Image 1 (cartoon, rainbow, N blue to C red):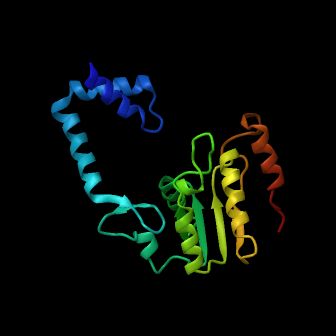
Image 2: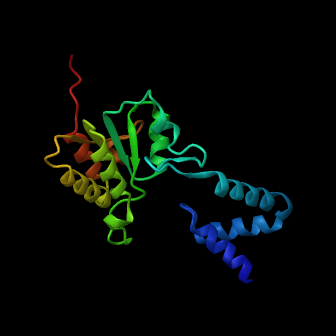
Image 3: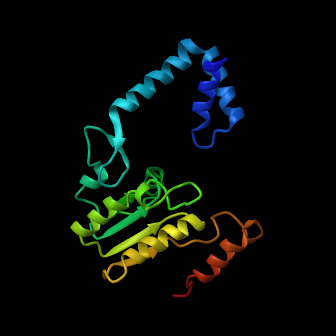
Length: 199
């Protein structure tokens, strides 16, 4: 059935949803159309009308609050900018409570394999923000894979000579894990980024 296939295909485009999972979700929605499908359609319609990405940082906000609360707040540290890949990264860092500066979501990273070049990401907005506001530090909170590393290298190179400190998140062993569960790259970075535990 073309309609069911189309629904499955649309659902499979969501992150973390494979073809089989999408098919099961589509069948469940069709079987429970009066409640579940109606609720989903209403929620998606509301999200489409009321949510957008912040024009400054890229975080999710309401269309009536752009720039978002994080960008509008006078309680944030204006000297530090944290560059992330997605709005989800902003939410995760905010939940940690460990950062109080400004954010900038690139909406991805440089990836020739995925067709993501400089013009496909929010580098132009980042350049405008760097030109209009003098940050003392830029923290690169990007993935620790090849694509994240190349994106970090590109930003670092573009800021060379600006006098702005460029740093990257520390990487190493995750909390509650052990050496035997870590890959060689994680172990190498954990060793090179080790910290002094003496007073």
